[in-house]
Length: 638
Image (cartoon, rainbow, N blue to C red):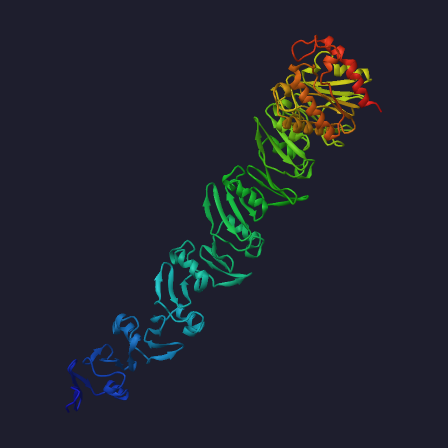
């Protein structure tokens, strides 16, 4: 009969012939396929018009293609419909020649997709995964045991394929891997991603030999050659067999003090390293696996270059010592306490001496600074003082109060030759060129010389040459025990090489040391060289007041008297008389007794008794003495 839409068909005793412009004449035989097509609505159903003549298939079966799908019949499988993505997958896989074989059931809905069973497997489809086949075996069984497409793994995203040592099939939320020794194991989430990015079946980890399991705040999964651990804060990281892994597990693994791994084990010059949430394990042939726990000791070691630095690899764990902690390395030991922070002792004489003194638990206490090179030697600060090493003297103890002056004046003092010691006078230090005493009462440093009761200390310039008017005046008043320190050319604001600086600076720094004791009187005679050098009034005043304050600190119980600048009354000494006036004003401001000697040489009749225009002959000193003594007596009498 003629179809007005240019589709026509004709019935025969053994079947039907259908014709369209697109397909031409196609026949279909009476039997199960025609019955199934008609049952599905024939040309008007979802299968649509005939596309191909029937094709015989093995096993006395037949297949016929329609516009919307394919009908297949065999005595063993019955009549089955194939359409859509599952049919396309079956076609591209080889159709009747594929490993799947013939369909044994029609497509059915499952979860968010569909499935269809074949003689040797099942094809599953979902909108996100497309159509993928599963085939009988351990992987398929495991997947179905977990709920198949409606389980945690979801729909397959690839067929099962062979890999070295086994098989693998991927799914929307993971993978299943089979090996004869490991069985069928599930991989999913971050651990699976780590395994994939590490090379998957080709990775150093090999195939999984166990399923993921919970551990602490995370999870883990064992593979042929290692284990992958995961936590929310560290992500997924692998550990591999060896000394580092053994050490970590001996400490409790991910539930121990080090926590989860944060990196894989990797090689470094001289060894291996693996980092963890709360520390790092280092390995070298000579030290074996050692832990560097996160904290101030590890931080200090890192700032010093870690295993590449002078400290080298750790040789033992961090352990507590009284008041703190320490850790040994191949090149030294790092100590930590709350009060000092972390500092190392390095292999060498200073460390050896420190250890002989019982280290942090001995008299030196904790290191409070790094070992520092200085003038061909070394020193290091500790809470109990300093250890100082000199080229010919070895390591000696210098107390912390004396050390700053020694450090500033190494060439003047020389290297220490004995450990500091304590007496009723204070803390002694014997250096090569001088013995010093730190007075704990005045908190000042002195030379080991002593001043007897009633002594006078005279400090000045070359005006103190010979038996000077200042010395004679002090003796006349009963101060016969005299200590004198005179430097030619010295002034309050004028320095000379012999002194190494102006008075306030050299005494404050310890460049020059005064003797220890309780003198009754301190006499200062300076200023003449400031006049000659035309030092400014401001500089003279500032330096003089700083120097006098330093002398008061040195001798707090002594009477300090300042002498002015000895001079004549003629014009050539006008500058000297001016400086005398400047000093008088400064002394008055500071509340210090002052003896003005401006014009005193003329008053005493000593103008003719000068060696030069500045320095008196002995006769001149003798002539001036009575006038000076009278003036001094007024200031020193009770």
